[in-house]
Amino acid sequence: MTAQPCEADVIAGLEPFASAEIVQRGGQHVRTMRQGVLNFSAARLAPFLDLKAVLSVYRLLRFDVPRPKALLADQHQRYLLTQVDAVLSLYPPKTYRTFMLAAAGAHTPVMSRLRDAVATHTGLQPVDESGDLLIRIRPSPLGNGWDVLVRISPRPLATREWRVCNVDGALQATVAHVMVTLTQPCSDDVYLNLCCGSGTLLIERALVGAARRLIGCDVHPRALNCARRNIAAYLRGRSNIFELYPWDARCLPLPDASVDAIVADLPFGSQVGSHAENLTLYPQIMREARRVAKTGARFVVITAEVRLMQGLVAQMADVWRCERVLRVNLGGLWPAIFVLRSA
Image (cartoon, rainbow, N blue to C red; front, top):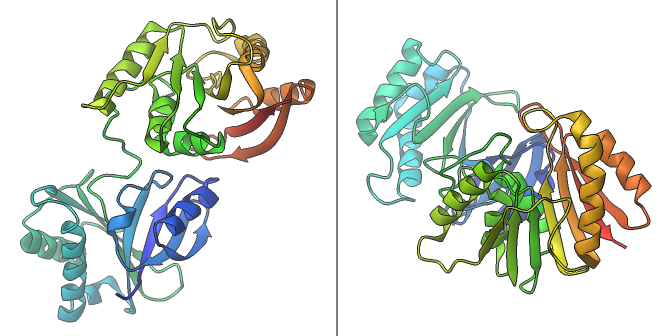
């Protein structure tokens, strides 16, 4: 089967992790086109329907035409609709009910005719936003012709089915997945999620594989209730392996050197907490995390308090060794993921 061009949207800063996952699923010739966008080729689309480090995947159709009007030509239109059919066939009938055509001048006569053609061919209802089937049309970034991108899933891959509840500052699931992988998980892990919020880092760890214990704690009852709802949606017949506790991350009822991996989405000081509070909170959490961590345990932290965290890592270099720092783009905010290892 001939490999076909595809495109993936990813969180800027996490391109290497998304690239590795795409290659693992059989993607070829993966390259970063610009921040947050990867191009690759693949013979089959099905292996990419449950990527965890990718926001969305598109079938990329390139047309060597000077203007979008040429897409209405019979040969181009038939090819486009054939590719739409190939995407729709990846899911059971009636999975898709609506579609959205995203393009500059989306309501011009040319785009309206193209929208009508898709609606007639597929029987899907056209909508102006949040369509199940997303078709994007743009000038080719290669400098000539036009691209049509057909998303291969009825919702972004980053939209987890288990998420039924959110709290302020909830962590984006693809970022959580990468943080989990940075702990280098293994089946015997005692895994601790400090300030667990809505449970994203707990559930993403369960998705990666088995662990001896999955422990989440938070002092806010609303956060714990939200985590319970998301975990219940995730479980759906699975055995409950999660432990949720109303613990203060500064004073944990856990033995010394008892935890293999620790993760935390610490208060950014904007939506949650304040910078003044973080000046005291962060060093207390860092010290307590080191107390419960085994020697060699990894502590993966995301925070927008980058300078504060950098200063603490320098001060605590005798107990926490910094292995890696990654900056990621979350809606225009560039927090950092710190990968620490207990000395």
